[in-house]
Length: 350
Image (cartoon, rainbow, N blue to C red; front, side, top):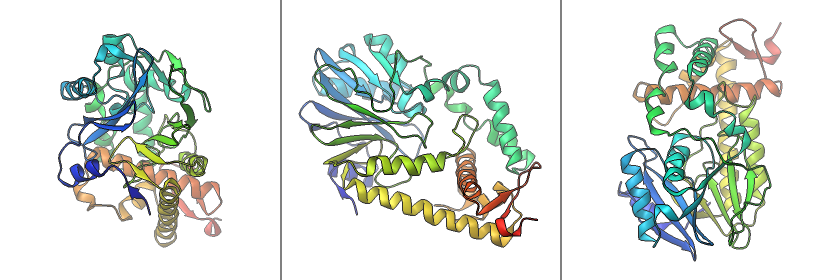
């Protein structure tokens, strides 16, 4: 079981208010940045004191509200936006990457990403026609009905304005020492939630800035889509083991609250997916041959299916697909070749 260390963050969550700007360690602060109309509520950006200024880990959505929170948070710690020297982006989802371009424009800071996420930027945020076409084809292969598939295909287009597209100045590989004077950070490549997700390890003080890889309350969405690696759930589970052995004094996630006992939380996340794999295999054995969409709608979710918004339904389908692909890869299930794909228990294949 984890130990909550971000007590003020947890209390703010319980009271449905924004948490405060906090001094986490000397020279290291957390700055909450609001996320509009989203159950995650806010991103926790981290500001690290470096020689001549500050470096940010993640930045927030590109909205005026988020910009005001970020700049106000910097002022609260005695800095300003012009003092930002670098923006280390854990991954390219809008709540982490969206403001990076605006920060660079205002400060001259360099922006860093892992190469795998950097490669996805053009299709994701610029020329999106291919991405939309690939998503529509994938949803059809999953057996999503045509009328709902059309809606789900464009379900995320509304967040495009929340990102200012900027190409990274620096590409950070697995294990790299981040070039920040006065700070010792090592990048840990943890694919799963995105192909290029990065965590940052501050070994001197035994702190893990975990992005969305390890969160204290929820499991990050691990979905298959056209910009993912072939088996993202296997990647994610392997990435969990990659950080499990770190002797972390505290985990600093991008959402919710800080906590201790990294290994216990990793084990909880691994157990959650193990349970989900069992549930999905049971559905296929009971209902198969079944499409991914049929399996998705038969699973238990945190709320009734009819209450889940289109974007979250698409994420749920992608997450189910990731589990189905892993089960196929280990030989528990087989998948048909036709469209839509249908899964059956391996022993029932003929």
